[in-house]
Length: 178
Image 1 (cartoon, helix red, strand yellow):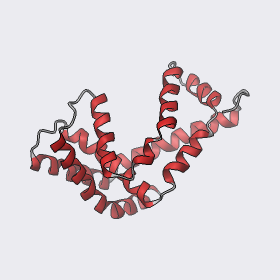
Image 2 (cartoon, rainbow, N blue to C red; image 1 turned 90 degrees about the vertical axis):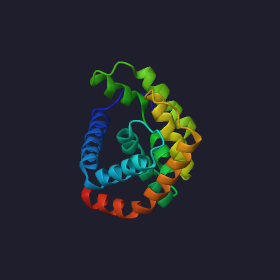
Image 3 (tube, rainbow, N blue to C red; image 1 turned 30 degrees about the vertical axis):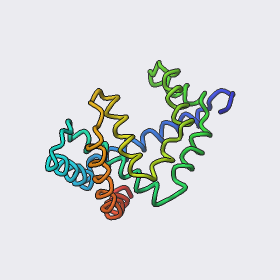
Image 4 (cartoon, one colour; image 1 turned 180 degrees about the vertical axis):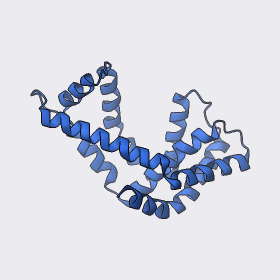
C-alpha cells in the first residue's frame, strides 16, 4: 500500500487484469457446464418445492459459490494466497484507476475491500454450511427472504451433491479457459 504516485505501468497492469477478468467471466457464463450446473440446481429446487423464490438467481450464485468451495478444498492455500495478493494492492494506484474510469465512490469501495480483507470469509469456504451462509447473505442483500432452517439444510445437500460433480466440471472449464 504505497504512497508514491501511480505509474503508467501499474495502471496498465490493472487495466489488463480487469480486461482478462471480464473475458474469463464472459467465457464462464457462456460455458455449457455453468448452464448444466444451474439447470441441475434449479431442478433440485423445483422438485423439492420448499418455497425458495428466484430459483434461477439462487442457482447462478450457488453454482459459483460451490465451485469456489471445491477449488478452495482442492488447493488449501488458494484462499490465503488470494488474501496475500490483495494485501499487496497499492490503493493509490487502485484509486487512480477507478477515478480514470469515472468511479466516484472510492471510500465506499475501500470500506468493502477492507472488510473483505479483515473478515477473510473465503477461508471458511472449506465447509458446505459456509457456502449456504454466504448465499443467504447475498440473498438478503438482494432483498430476498432469509432461508428457513429446512431450506438451509436442503441447500447444504445441494452443495454436497454439486461438489461431487465439480472435478469433471472444473476440468472441462480449465480446458475451455486455455
